[in-house]
Image 1 (cartoon, one colour):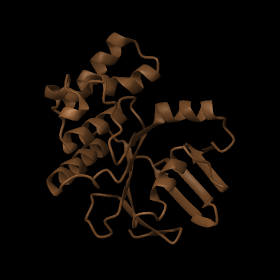
Image 2 (cartoon, rainbow, N blue to C red):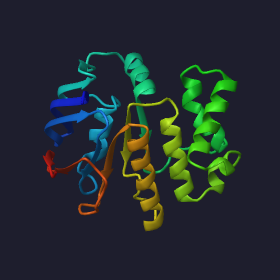
Image 3 (spheres, rainbow, N blue to C red):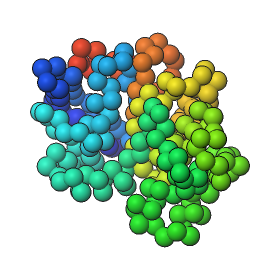
Length: 222
């Protein structure tokens, strides 16, 4: 397997609080990784650094073995657009756009023509058996449906990596299980690498590696 993302000696501080301390993490292509930890320990900060949304105070971040620390914001945005999909805790769907249009959005940002992106967005809905939601608006969907659409949107540009920030935290048990099955399907069938954060310290997840973030340090569990 090839190294997709690598963090070396990464530190991050907010004010006087050191949120991340000497983080070393290597993520191989095709892995499904969970980062566990209580609320407020820095899991979101870690994902933002992995996704080039924040710069570490110290340390190095590499994508496909190449350092990204010294790239400018436009270069980082371009890398994110074509390599990384984000799934947020509270969905982040655009309320004025239909489900289909929400999925098309990253394709439009990547410069895909309207007819092509409409076709691809519909094919993604078809793959996950959700075409019945195509013309609905986010406010008319259940929490579980919204999160599934957020996952599909994250897949639109064929990312190598999906970063899922506590994706099950606002869902009931049934929808949480459905979402984990969906992420597992994406990982196994589409070979997309997934890093998921969760506040559940003991939940059994279909991961290849498990980590605990505590007191700023990342510890391997499995």
